Length: 426
Image (cartoon, rainbow, N blue to C red; front, side, top):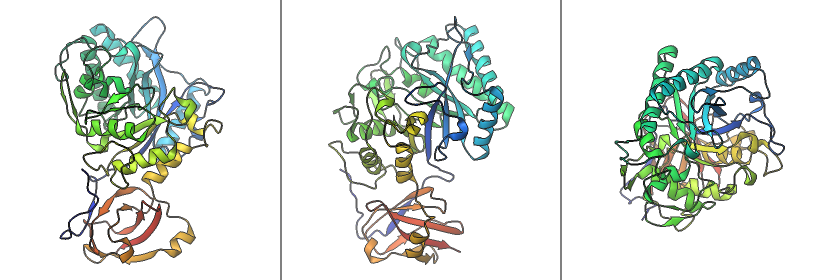
């Protein structure tokens, strides 16, 4: 059972993520024109997106492993320039491998090597920051073995290939390659139901790449019902599904192929459709998404029947299919998903009327007196540009803070979504 208050002997405590932790809005940009979700220039992507997954690199016709990519609505020079512009503004741009319609198989060591060479060529030609693994359908399957010791050569070769690409990238660029993955639920949480075929098939891949993966964002859509770690069965399109399937990644779970160890919250983002038409199922309105994420982060009440075992204030962020769909005004409200991210993970601080109404408190040492109206409430802390830094909890009139760099910080009350305090650290 989760508790929202600490004993009276405790003071307010701020739980901060590790140094440099950030939250991200990840979106797939699809490289085709859909009448309801048109082709979108990279330069026109909403600036709230921090990581853009370009979809997709696919095998050349007649192969299952020689990868190719070419933008359909922009020439290569212009496309590359737009990637560089996004990167200059602090964004990461990745090339996503596969998708629902492209089967990728590495059936020999030669095919593995050709896959590596072709992917490095794409990365170098366009200046991508890394790759996203979105292999679906028959691309990933298991016939036996365990999570820790797979027996399928295709899985082993894929792990080797990604490691080779990452090593070559770091050698060429002097910095690590960014790596993300977007499996469907059957391939991950489905391992609790069975371990074979597609069920749990990503688990050996994720285990083999565990130290390299920056963000894991399972697709919580186009899914059948799935077990939670409590033994309950949950259906997509509800807060319980979001919470239960996310916590399975954060707590780990057992399978017939062995235990799958948890991923840290800094590496987990929640993947959902941007609007109803973006997927066959799994869409939730902003109120449901925000209730589920607030609960997971420890800043809101339980939204359904599933009871989580912990709070995860440093959850990485949100992922959506797709940016194009989020921009389309005819599916839901335009940029509805980006708006939800902003509500959940940032604090708006630029409105003069709000600023002038705030109380400013100068930090004195490491303890901060809290106005009586905030006693007993859960608070969020953000830096001057609105990036979330953690949560504060407790039941006394003082807020204990770790050392903070000089600057301005803001405190928000999640229940009212309003700014409560401005903190000045001299």
